[in-house]
Image (cartoon, rainbow, N blue to C red; front, side):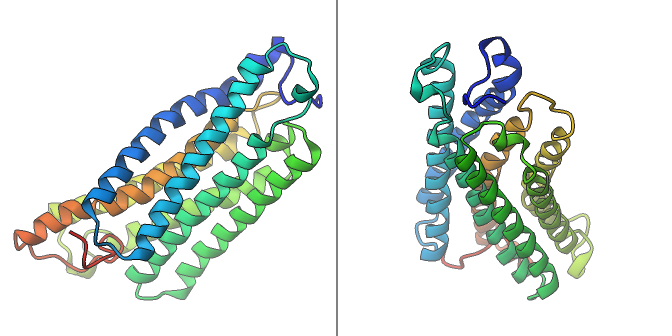
Length: 282
């Protein structure tokens, strides 16, 4: 692979098109994230400060990640298109910074879910620990991949290095663990919950659907490593997974709005701390 951060013009579509498509999809997901953020700030003004700080941190990291990917493709497709100037000979800092931000955001969200799992499993150390270990593994591997990209100044290392496969394996494993554990502990029939209880069914869907989606995206990311050849196919799911994680956290927190409404209508509920994280929320 050349030291240029962009492929040759005749291979531009094959090389960067998958990542650009993922970037286009992620822009829409960023808009959804912004909308969820506005809804959260208006609805849950009395949430604990720790929860608010996590939400704000996730939103800021997601926003900066969107800037980095936007700047990357602007330089790739506009500024450095058929341009051999010195600044176009190496990859821009936005590429490896974007990788750092993506793995950091995933780590924050996975730790959030680990805390929820700690609550709903009645402080099960093995299950919570398994999520934390895999989350830490994906963060460490992702950070190492970003550092390697920065050191080599080669775009290929961001998608084809030896760290990419274990990085995607750790990410897929963590997402699958989170989805499986939450589904196991919130499934109908557990703790005396009847299957006919539509409210509990709704909570299960809210709690699991984003986790399942994240798991599928991470698995696709892993599989594409083996078929991408000279194209950066893994850039497509990688761009989506970051935004999906941010939306997942906000979707779970914002789901409490309907829960509070039903509580005010005196509907009898079992305690579900994975969703109701603040007793003072409106």
